[in-house]
Length: 357
Ligand code: DAH
Image (cartoon, rainbow, N blue to C red):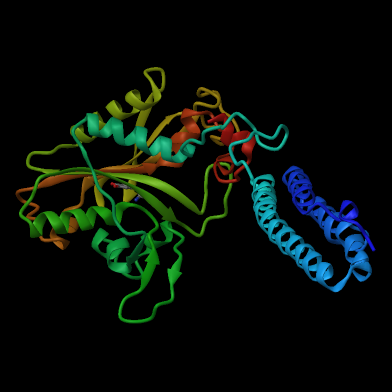
């Protein structure tokens, strides 16, 4: 027989369990609460063991009380588990979060260094500015040309010995027309003249910058892929002095007044008369060095009065219109303006060089 004083106080037992549960903030400590209050050694289990000593009536009532306690505690524990599981999950998520704005010393530099245009692009833009300032417009044309644009319309028929002036990359695309990587920007002259004729939009005062290709072995002054800027003026009453004036104005505007330029007679199939223009070598200031092959002069490009045969090829009346043209290397200009002894430095992507300009 057991008296009621040794019986479990259901209200107190549940209240105690509830208080401990509320203080439990991890799933593991809830497991402890569960075993302490519902496990084999818990007060509840001990109370169960006394049931056998009770008479049937008491056993039934007390049994029901103990069962009620178990039910209630199981419900409380399950509820607390849900809450704590949720807290643990969000804490874990938070711990896993990656703060991309955080600066980790040694891993991310706090100084973001800005890039800039390549020296060739800068030079092209500056040259365009000089010519736009003189009243020229800027146009461009395709890098892949048919033989007709690159040679024939420029008064260089097939098998003409002048073709030897350009070591050409031919694209084997078969008939009907040979296709080449343009060897100079002069074919853009033909495109502009054809458009102007079609749209009845003469005169033309334009410069045409762009990339060109030649089967050249790179050296201090040559690249196989390089840039030229072409100039074309087609108008009425144009004379060679207009051409000379433009070359002179451009040279002093771009290289400065202490650099002189000179024109030397030359031959180009698309101009008559033709000239080569040269400037004082800026590396040695005329004294002679490796870059200018000891001459003191650097050839920038060619120029001349547009050959009437070229005007006729595109349907312009040579009796009414004349013009001049010129074409020179943008890379060569960059080299001379910034005194770069070897042009290959422009394309070798050496950071020490790139960061300098
Ligand atoms: N296209 C020539 C070359 O690359 C350069 C040139 C010469 C362009 C005379 C011209 C010109 O417009 O009139 O060798």
